Image (cartoon, rainbow, N blue to C red; front, side, top):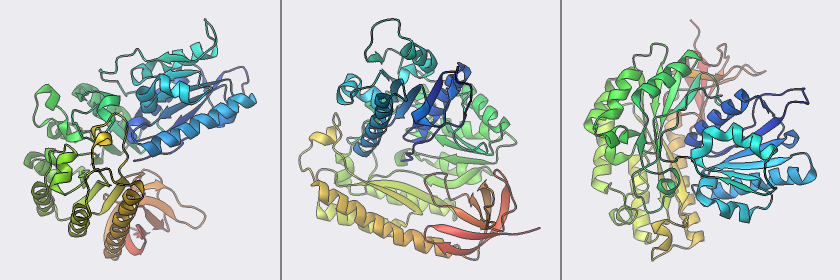
Length: 462
């Protein structure tokens, strides 16, 4: 899960213009919401202030998926409230998933919040900021939760936080899966596919502004179109995205394993633009745990899927996430997960220790695993995966790789890039020696060495 505090990027010396400081937290889906809100704020005439403590109002777009994300959000809110108490900030507004999930409870937990804004009110953020700065009624915390959280937001016209040469593109909202550990359906609602014409318009807009790579995101990307009765919606959408000439890389994120069928595998393997990069969160491999998780996957099907993917694409890069310590996870079922991870040899793997999130089925299950055991198991898995990842990195030495440059050369002539097997923000990077290219350029490189997860590559001239 990508999570970072991202300062806005505009300053002004005009003291008469009201300023907004913006803190963006959470996953890429939340980041898209942040980018859309930033555009709305700028278009409304506010100055987006880089120094949060100097802003008239601070907006915090929160994540509320699991306990650490909530804690990060609470700390960011508390910091903004401290600035307000000191007199440097006038108002504090909280939006995003945690605002949607907690509502009034958030106001009760953190004193000093002026407004809590639900997900359905995202596109009204500028008007809410104005109302908060200049209230027409009495003083006090205000809740804005009345927007339609069951619709589809139009994400066109964003102010990108990501570099201009790549961007996230959300193709749906919500989720119909009922995973026992997950809060997303209660926060984001049921699965809704974004209309194809809007997606294609957004893609052309992003590419027209310089994007050569689009990361397709959703809560459940390969479910796209199925709520509308279309079985192969993602494959069909890919076919239309491929026709955008200046778009070079299409990266598919968040593919639910049970939804990866033969048609989608064929579409990916045959495409010249869709990267041979599969991000599929399996969460566990023991059948009893998968059943308790309310996942439709089972071990035999997951093993067969991995074998099928590698048979179809011998250079496929596989990323996954797993959860350690779900209630009922025994030493034996955890050992089975360890053996599977060693067998599967994922290129990248993230492991979360289970958090009993309020309102989820798993929080009330029998057989809760002690927190310390959950954390120890997660650490064990990450240690095993680290050895696998380091070895895989070393195997790249001597290979030729096409890299997309993210940052130009520093004072030592070293740039930062990624080959197709490295997704932005979540994966390793390529350190490009003697880099002469600029961000957004594709360059041919040779891998000289591995530096833990990262690769050291040399730009090949001519």
